[in-house]
Length: 209
Image (cartoon, rainbow, N blue to C red; front, side, top):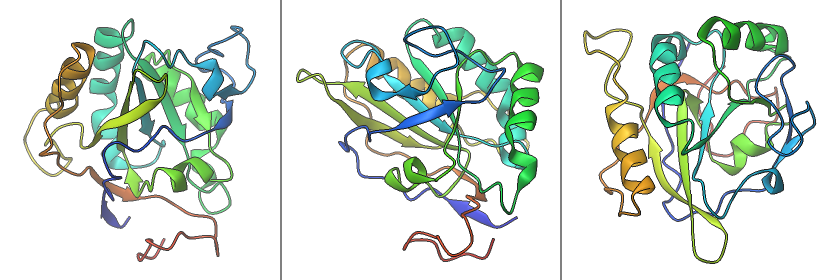
């Protein structure tokens, strides 16, 4: 494990295009109710904010906040479009494969679609650096979605005694839902580095896998 912070994608960035397969046994396709790919046009971009969560199964930082993610989806599931994104290389880390992801979702009763970013293109578009990593986009008048929050869930870590309560992300969610400006003093998430495919690391990547 290499301790890594978020790159903090610039606020105002547009929601990147994506078309990703749903992990069998998780969530549902937002347009048909079947396990077809989830893509931008599947989302309700004009009304509901979109929260992209870079997750995996083996990272202790993700495991540490799994219960709070469950609470978040229960509290905000009617107002926010939650999407789990699994971008780790299955070449180097097969323990983050579809069966393991589906088991993780069942264990925590996650109802959101868990998407396989197998070519890691969405992670690169987000400049994602670690798991967990959170990206909250909100609808604009032109029908696009822009980044309003990125960074940590809260200040809880496996190595400290702070309870995981989702404080930072919950504050941003409440502001976005109520059409208010999100605070700019946003703290990076910290976790395990994204496991890139060998030889395909992005330019900002400087840590060994």
